[in-house]
Length: 378
Image (cartoon, rainbow, N blue to C red; front, side, top):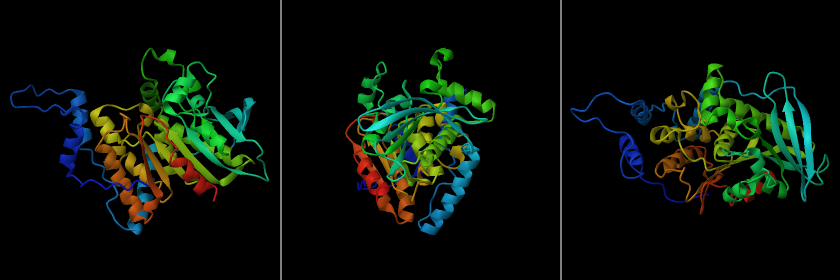
């Protein structure tokens, strides 16, 4: 667990001012001076609105009773914002292919159910497992990039994939399988084989998908949450899996989704969130974020830090690379401080771990692998 001293808390306006000027020394929110044209741009208006977002349901208590009450209330709020994320009750499996590798067999499967899109998943099953010898299961979640879940399971045979995997240490699903875990790695929308980028005319598929699904009263993040819970169902249906020993790991957008599914689905006993220690308030104030991460209305009540706090009291590792430009100083420490408050209130501070490693936007595993072994194999 990271034991570095917390910074002295800053007053809200001073904190935001410091955060907004941390990159390049000047605020990204221009100020109107006397005599200036009062007309404003939508970017400026929205940035100022983000700066003063209400976040009315942050946890501000100190006791376990207060914290458990807050978690119940905020989880209910989050469920209302997301909508229904339950997985299908009845579904079938189509096996597209299988390949026997040195330490495990890789299955390429398609899950099909009435009323929802089919879900492509990889299932990695170590050799020698069955009803008499079971292993823990790990849900491994991919992020952005051209390879989707192919990179997570180490598909180096695909054109250009090897360099992508090596740069981000992306094949953590393959690494978990080699360590003896049964791994499921689903493909989310709009990524991998579930998107044809040529159809978007250079536009961001995340943004386009978000707008189109909103017209139907749906959200990409909720659809992906449903599919991740479906993938857990698949793990628990397998005779090779110890059904009560389930972990989750993800990188980048996969880290965001690992955080969300672990917060919502308590079947997950331990999580590792990599490259996602950033807040919606920061991303929406200083820049923008992909539509696949958007939860409309969230900033009225809380932020990603509040969602991550719903994982407590279960153990969680938060990985951040020292050269990861997506993790913004000051804001990342605010995220950590909010997590620490919840774990401390529940008297489980030792369950919260920060892996600050030397490197960029990549998977580490330095703390995660031994901790998963300790929690899921005990």
